[in-house]
Length: 236
Ligand SMILES: Nc1ncnc2c1ncn2[C@@H]1O[C@H](COP(=O)(O)OP(=O)(O)OP(=O)(O)O)[C@@H](O)[C@H]1O
Ligand SMILES: [Mg+2]
Image 1 (cartoon, rainbow, N blue to C red):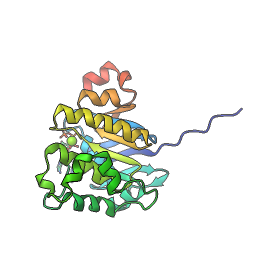
Image 2 (cartoon, rainbow, N blue to C red; image 1 turned 180 degrees about the vertical axis):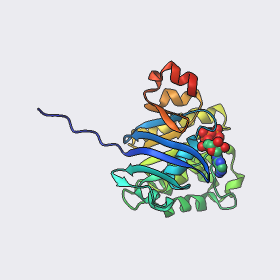
Image 3 (cartoon, rainbow, N blue to C red; image 1 turned 30 degrees about the vertical axis):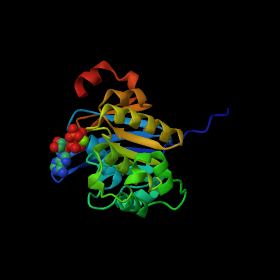
Image 4 (cartoon, rainbow, N blue to C red; image 1 turned 180 degrees about the horizontal axis):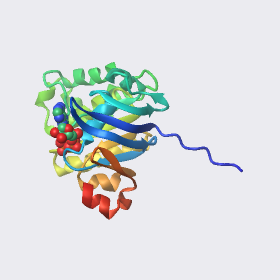
């Protein structure tokens, strides 16, 4: 019998435990994400959604079995994970306020994989034309929406296969929220995987699959339309 080849996951995470000192936030979460897929992380405030992204990026200590494109990644420092193909846009965006837009972009390229080298300054400026006239401005002079563009552009400069986005439209005007949804679709269409924390309704419409975090565990993993009512009532 000829079985179809099994689709291997881009990111595979089992038994993820992470927290802050004595406070354990995640106590065995799991997820799978395929190339070009948008996986949305849902959960209540404080359920550990940002903790999950920070643990995957290597910014806080964590224990797990986790691989990116088949390569074991837990134990590697953040810059090595970036070279494996992870890009991260933190909740507070964390751009360098006194550095220029161009300098922020160059810092994103520092941990870039050399191949495939899809993104460079010209390519991210084509994606975010509003940043082009601001290249020499200090990042702190940008509007909230422009700072979000810069944070995403900086992450793309690392040529990621997988983008970790933490509430990318927090505090932004509706127009910028809609533009972000379109942008994510476009990036996905180019094969980029996206693991996103976002509670606004547009995110569920866009997501291929979701995970629901609760009590430090993955309580549900599947299409957004299939979240069982009891999971929703207990954890959302
Ligand atoms: N640096 C830290 N030190 C100690 N505890 C923290 C730290 N960061 C987060 N926590 C705690 O860990 C838990 C999970 O936080 P996390 O930031 O992952 O939540 P979240 O799901 O992203 O929600 P939200 O973004 O709404 O805060 C919370 O109880 C939070 O108070
Ligand atoms: Mg958070």
